[in-house]
View 1 (tube, rainbow, N blue to C red):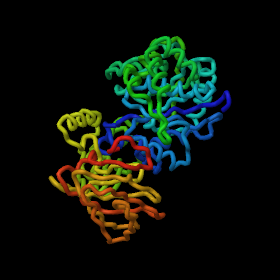
View 2: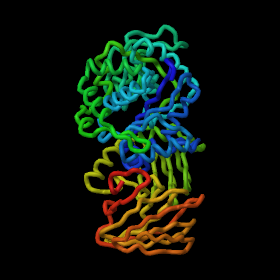
View 3: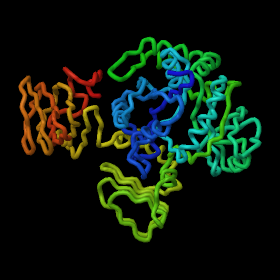
View 4: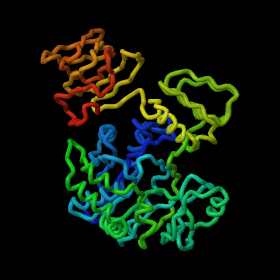
Length: 483
């Protein structure tokens, strides 16, 4: 690692509820391929757009425990081995997460620059983005805390604003401004005034600074964060490719953003304007804005027929959607929920998701399709005492050796070959062959082939929740029986 090194720190713990029903707590937007021009996910694109930067190191990733295998798998798909995947036991906003990353980076024996990035942003002009980062390195190496302010394109009320202390002298030059103040999300009239002054930019939440610089400022303005994060790292546990922070210490950190903890107080804040076609994809309207549309302004994906319709976002995962004479609508169909919303009201979806959760609708948080390190399963249909799933197992992957106290299972192979273990005896099942797993039987399902294994599982019993799993052996080091 050189003195000029940059370690990207990618924060990927958000839930992305404003893009419900595609994005949910169990599988939020950063893990989806929302850019219609590529199959790469937002998380993957966040790192790949940095390739070619001088001094670029492998990233430090921060996520919650539930998403750890998704994060690891998505980086495996782009042939990147992160320096660390740090698991937060609870969400504590950006300041503790960044503190942990800085302490981890220092523990590697150097004092690198940390490029703090959210996992769910889109950037169109990657060349300009890297040029601004290169310019920012000069200030960061001098000990400044650099943030990137997005040059406003409209009087947006959904973002905070940053005010610089003086106006740029040259519009064709990247100018760093000392930060004067941060402004919370303004009303429309205030936003109209702010965008007329080039000193004001949108607050992107992206930063560049030396690891030692941010640690020093945190110790000055939020010492309790550094105190508890140091303990959480000293007591962390290595679990395969993951670092599990010690939970009790990390939970004592205040839940606070880096802006409030440090940036609004420090005298070292610097903002660089960034004009790169940035979007945080914070609503269905913003996703419609960046999506490729037809001559009628419609984004169409899936089984869609749209007649005399304009300026709509129409997406179907399964069912046929027919739209006639509709305008400015968001219509999204998944296997368990349908969203129909006016584009201009799409910011309110987050409140709807809260209502779904408080009313105990599982669709508010969970997808029908649940990802596991060995593959995934999808609930097809269920009754009071029975449940049918489609299980997909990746090549050379195995479920844990397990048993259930409250349910029996019947497996039917529909694609590939399954290696079945029941109470120590093994057998191979091919397509259209089946087996029965009685209650209390120790069993394991494996795919030893080169192709995906698919099977139908029929559960029956008095309790069908995933918590009814007793593990005896597991290749993925899972601690919780149901994870």
